[in-house]
Image 1 (cartoon, rainbow, N blue to C red):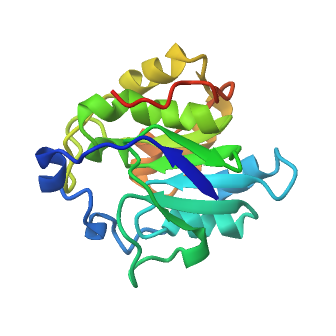
Image 2 (image 1 turned 45 degrees about the vertical axis):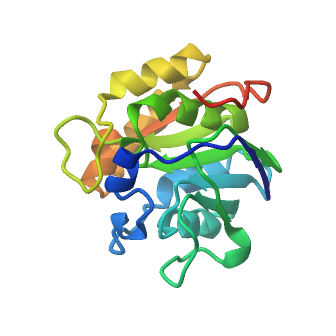
Length: 206
């Protein structure tokens, strides 16, 4: 997979928040593949997917198991700690404007947004809608404890950003996730959103 991006510089607050430290991702994280499996059935295999802000690669591994042709993307340099095969790992600054080749259908962005400064919120959303037609998105709300949380927003904040570009909440799959996902964070924060791919959105960062 090729990634076209714009250059950006890490702010001191983000560095202090530890976004470049892979230990921010819990090694005990066990993905729940049922939702990914449902989404995989919507497309003709192999379907390209991206785990945006993949960290250790737990979601990447789950997507692979569901038959996706998946790539893990993270700002951290790969190391022995990652579960993602080297050929499927891309070190990319996810605050930059991104365009992937081949273009994925599905992007997972789980508990990443809260680790980026507020100014990068819309850039992150634009990266998702520029490159996909469906996403599983979770982000920590105000009051959720965690290492390096610097951008805690309520769900309605993220929904408004997606709605701005014509994306809507998939009520059925979001409710399925809320009722059945074994992880409390995913039940409360998880959203499935869909909309038109917008490949012509400018790559320029804020």
